[in-house]
Image (tube, rainbow, N blue to C red; front, top):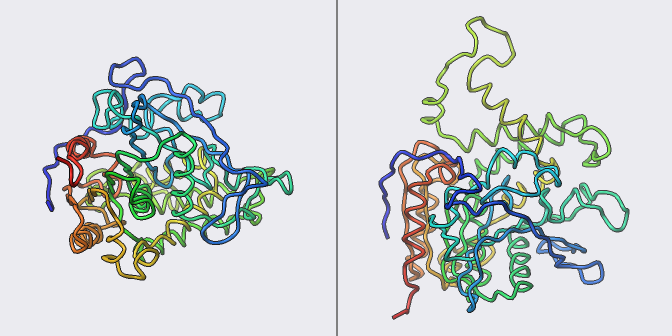
Length: 405
């Protein structure tokens, strides 16, 4: 079990042009119906949903033996558009995708760490999403109007079960690797626990088996900001003004947890945007940055989805679900190779929490690689430290599975 790694200066995500040899090019999302009104999808917390449509993207070619699948699970505000440039951005109204490639474009593509000339890569939007998969924005067949808060509570376990149903529909029995960061990392862990025979390798980046009390607190305040917005209307706001102010404030608070004190000091310090004091307006550079993050977020995300996703994040506790509160007992279910990667300045999913998970795997006699990456970028480091993360992924993907000759 290793606990350190060198960290070269990262290249911030920019992505390759669609005609670059290292890009997957122009991409198109696909949609499958995985549940119907007559045969709904049963949920972990009770109740069911049907119909369910799941939006997903794939890159690369599925091998004849269907044994080269890498499943990427996305984080809270992420989506299935992992790499390349969205050919349907105008048609679907996702105009931000015209300016930005997939969120992990520096990692996924021909010749990159997750090499699409070798692997068949798949990512799906999870249940409750506002990006094509059924969620609060979708029409409730019983009313003909958006679900809003009548949408049932969903969990990380539900997302993984639905992803498994998607793989079944695509004729994929087993995945070479499941990988995700943050909330995506918890899905990767849940895959290894819920489907131990279907996962050869699991990579958990910047995530641990449960969220801390501090993380729960930030999520709670973010949800309150949304629900106290005068335009929230108990979640029934789709035909009227949106609760943009509340959602923006929730995003601003969450974004603070994605950064580190060191990184914020280096990037902003106490610098002012103007010399004269402006009272209670946006005056400091860090205020301007958070204001921009909030305003841009409301252009691409749904407030109700934010409520459901953060609550699923709160509920996830791998030890309670699979080990009766004992993390080592839960880890005994795992049959895959596991790599756990933490980042030194991450205070949302701390290195101590990630190391505790890695040690539980060791005590359960499971093969695990643990790496703590020195970084000043906080929780966001899994999206920013692309050179280091790519190096780790590249080598771990080539590691033979346990028991192989």
